[in-house]
Image (tube, rainbow, N blue to C red):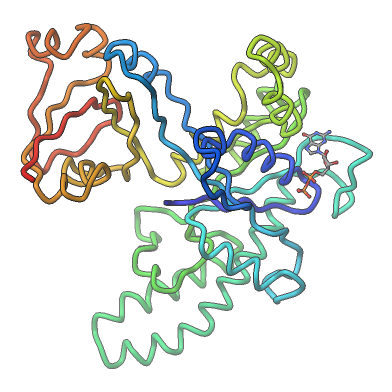
Length: 362
Ligand code: GDP
């Protein structure tokens, strides 16, 4: 399972958000006796299509895709020098597949800010700087070794070149994730994978804001642009926790009062899923209507393999109907009669909204 590691300066609302995530934990809800890692929150990816499919197929239950967030012990300035929790912190981040930074935007004189004032983009810089310094240290050790290797083996030269280009970019204060993906100054991050650099991981920002910012489109646009190409989510962590204790009607009222149309955790789950490079496809039957998680760009056999490895090995073809087409037709039979059901082979790249039945040899 891919995970997002939650990081952030002290007192920005990480624990508050994480408590909301664990309270919304699908494992906790569905499997009361399952072992739940204390530092992992597994939240459902909201998908209204599942309920409609369950109606159509009279499914007993719906099973959403999930997104896993890991709580990582607090970062402090100087983490890259191994101060305090530094080393453990960096080791934990290395294990995460993406970095989710909680950033304080809310104003509250009763909550102390470590740097004395609320300045979201300065906080983003602080964390970036620690991660950039840690990567530079890794590269400083790696480059002499890569130089030696490149002298002996030609195929190591591209890795060396990528490592040197990474040093230049990091020295200019930028993360590798934000490096251009195409063009002459693009860096092939795939070549650097063996170095486990931290700033190559995709980033996601959670701006923990109060109503004044949640309803301020200009401010939100400004912060969103400042962290691009990373995804940005705006929510009020305290409200998110309170929402989970309310019935649906009161929850909607509370959301409206802070200018939100849906719980921030929904937006966070979607952004987390997107940041990890994931997508879903759908299956439906009398037992369940279900969303399955695959990598963006996965082929039909790879998608089948998520259900069972035998499905991938024995894959013959996939019978696919688009969710919208299926809904319009009203049943698979009607969709088939309308020519909307496609047979796809082993090279087919899965699309969002595909409702699938696999044919395979056992
Ligand atoms: P952490 O150190 O990042 O884990 O921060 P906490 O979650 O412990 O929050 C620090 C303090 O800020 C606590 O007193 C929270 O109640 C408060 N807090 C967290 N989120 C919000 C928020 O959205 N608005 C306000 N006003 N206070 C918050």
